[in-house]
Length: 257
Image (cartoon, rainbow, N blue to C red; front, side, top):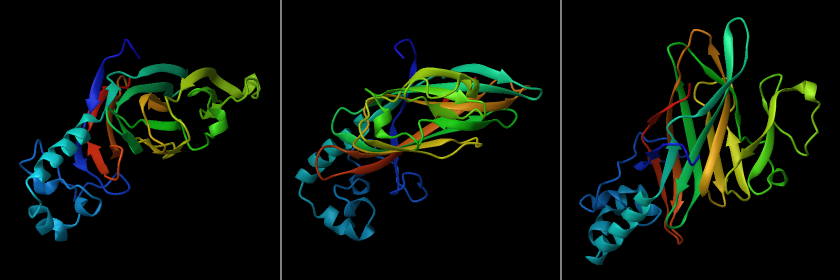
């Protein structure tokens, strides 16, 4: 990832508890001028009934508020501008790709306890992710220093190869290769499922830091010559004490193929 260029995903919106609904979400202010829209407790995040109490806060509240906003905005995800994509097989009508997206998660203060990451695959004709990795089948015992050996089966599904040699080579379409799960410990991972143009990953529990990767097997019509990815994320940020913020990013474009 050291040779890759990155584009930042930065917090823009407040999200709901599922980190995906922003219909009533307010935009993050640039500073403290919109202080009534940034709150310092769980109840203050969404309850209009607390507006009067917020306005009654002492002047020190604005200083505390500014620090809190700065912490929220210091957290970001840097996404590689181009995914690492290779063609793994073809048939009469389709090409099948393995595409890996790398990212760096920047958390200067505190930690991210939950994160939702979504990729929208865009092309002139419909393309779908047949499968994605990592996914919910991963268990703690499979992870050794954040790395795992993964193969792609004849059905183009990702299969953890733990221990090496557990799969018969005739069952493997591509692999195995070493996949970096990042600096994660006891983190639950849920994958939205395949056969979709909008694959999504959900991470939770002990926090997410440093580098992280997601991989897709993609089916595209042969006539499709390029694929764009619109990526966005939402996360729950905890700076190290009782406060927390659920925020989301706007979409950024990356090159998939």
